[in-house]
Length: 493
Image (cartoon, rainbow, N blue to C red):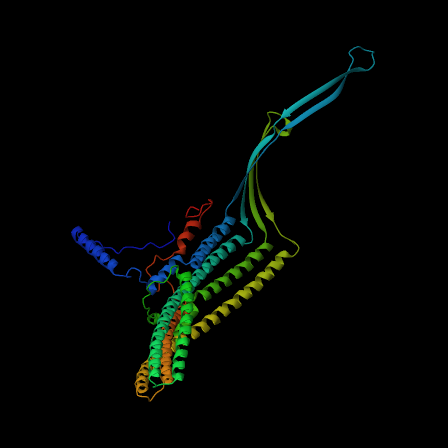
């Protein structure tokens, strides 16, 4: 059985006549063919498709799913304590016996002294062998088996929450990597266009120098700005390559024609207080921490069970042949008994284990408090980043508009000699910086919206409505929880 939820088809979706269905399929094929002819159409990537790739193929997320499947086996391991243990035994050997004896017999004639001595010599070869089966069933062991089963269930729940946390981190990292590529690509284009503008500025400055309108200082300033622009371009190029590498690591493919992405603020709570309240309940880190508290509490009970009696029922049957070297002899034995073991003192190891388990329980409770504080701080921090990004976008848009007007005015004034070349270069740099700030703020807003959604514990493929088959951990759990034997995994490994 697949470990992925199967996608269901709505009832009545194909409830039309065969001819109508044929026409619909033909139209769809024609549309697909037309779209395939559009240059670069098939290679365009959206945020949703990129995150879907990460959800299905990210190695970190897939290894965490494998970890959950391995943890599922803790339950059948614990339940084995309720089941009997059956052991078969067998033995076979060779036995050789040689007996020598002197036997004295009395004489039959009366009055004669002594008797006759007879020497006997016997040899025997036998093959003693036997088979047996023993069965042992535990009736009571201080509730250790029952508590171990409960602990295994809590371990599975904790592993699933850890997997959900990994899913959140993967999707958040994927969204960040996606926006980083978009941002760095835009910045690289701005830097490239800036070089083109400054090259034209340098050419015009040289022409004006030739006719005596400007000085050599103006030419040097234009050359310096162009050199700095080229240095900034190479830095932007390196940043883009780094973002592409991170994108490839998380998403699994090289970025190709990334479409602009929107924020997911529509999915967020309306207020910070509501976000904190939701996060303290929903965040998988907190839920997993509380499962760890349950695991530690059950471990205390398991260790305390070592001080209680153990009651087992033991039954066995054996069949032996050629017993004690006597050929053609058979002995059949059947036995059954109850065994009660009462621990009195084993050097104090049980008491040390109990004290250690109690300290671990205290540590788990403190860790749960730490997780709550961490999640709360993360929500407040990411919410602040989102609000800052919103405000920065508005400011950056105004700055870009003002810088464009200022640059146009400075260029006109420079043509009539009211401004210097340095003034034009400075205005050009101010506009460039404003555009870069706007691009970064737009990226920050999208990334912050995903960060807030992750901080409250809701950033999942299901909540994002990604076009994927959702992974269902209960499928593997149901396949293995009741297994009594077998070494193959459900996927036949």
